[in-house]
Image 1: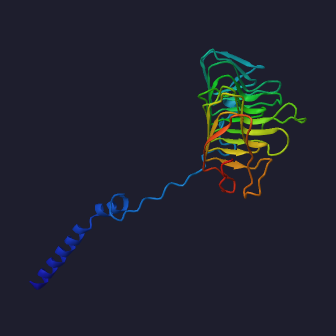
Image 2: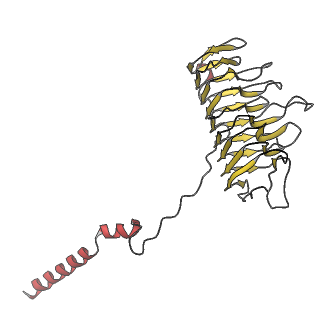
Length: 305
């Protein structure tokens, strides 16, 4: 009888303990921010979101694409094109419509002004395409007066990556590289993205833009030229080379979370290996925001004065 009473006592004690500390109470203490003694979880660690080289653009077998041959392909009005390889540039007369290219390749060749040329206004949407130009006289891989939504694409070979960006343009997740060089430096200066007077209200986000770091051809990763330019958001990009990383003649640049890598104006005295940023004294280029910009050594780059 004594043994039975002892066993019952042990069982009652165990039940009391398990009722006092429930699994739900433990979870509450660990994850409920309002619980006494709770510890806030660590903030997420920021990671680079710009693409690696060769990781964007058309990623399949180019031989399997539908061929469009000829010196140039002319398109008028709206068109939705998927899975095509062009052997010359695309000349687009927008007429206020939308040209949409997906999973395409353009080999624009020589003696052209770009891979896609907008001859009149409208909207160009390019996703997961590879656009190549091989002519030092070309203006830009994509250029002309149109709104440009260019994502996840590989652009190379022209004087500029993207030349002209109408208000509302988005340039995101692209690799812009190997822009054309002019031996005498008279024909070409390279810009990753050039924005002209009256444009702006453009977002340049999470791109990998690589210009020559030396020589007379490289100008700027982002270059604004002219008056009446609006806000430009430059966020999360890898920006390499050029005579300067940014040249801002007009408009307000919001420069957030970018990685700047060597250009031809190396500032060793301030402890980092870049970056010259020009804001022309005679014009109206300004900085709206400057946050969390670093160099390739993970050192903070202070806001230019």
